[in-house]
Length: 317
Image (tube, rainbow, N blue to C red; front, side, top):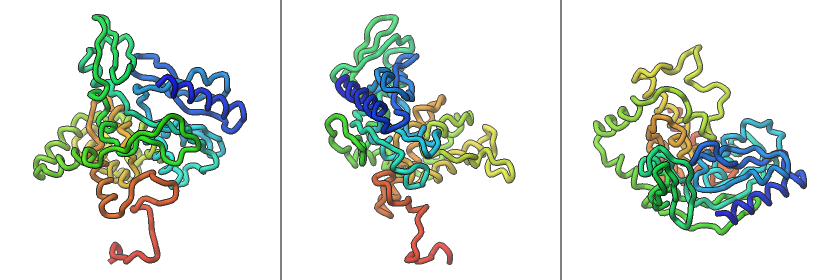
């Protein structure tokens, strides 16, 4: 991982020194253990700040829409970031010419909640070492198998390698197992209608409407979200069941064919609400019905956003 980190620093410094980009978006050392922070590097001599490891939680593509479209951006892009960037390109949120993807293969993000569950909350530092996460606590060192600590979205990831990157750093990894990716969907579909609703209400009722999921999502870029619209009001804005359920359902449908299954929403949620089972199910429908996967190229529109004169117009009848 240190070799990959060095390569990222060198490439970022080159891009800035040669004025190919105006800013490089990556990660820098954490202010608290297990949580490196997004970094926005504008000078070549700042590239030494950049870090890269399994504790990097954010989907950096979220920040693409926070810059003017004329800003030339270098983005450290794992599989999910590259796909989110392509999805944004398809939706005309950026031009390909203003984006330089620094591709890095991803071995999965370590879920800080799983680390705290097994090592305790008094964590002083953590590091990865050949498939093991070594955690230093006030009580001593704890060694944990990295594979058991992966965030759920990473454990079932299909595409760990960046798509159509401008430069690829590190050796590509094997693609994920589709059968493993489908396991949560199959388990949910096997439930009765009453059991599905019970699971959904159990998750939704914990929502405090902080919208951390929205802020963490690269595909939630609307200037005004439907829940913030007051004239007319589309959904109840309180934590009443009607409001929280509407929020999660409508947001999921807005992500149909757009969500890249990065899990950033779940990692950001302070209440540890499971959300991706909804979007993963919708994405599976997109694959089955339309042969479409979000972000796999920067030309094909999501099915719900596409229209052709050859359509059979059944939706109008």
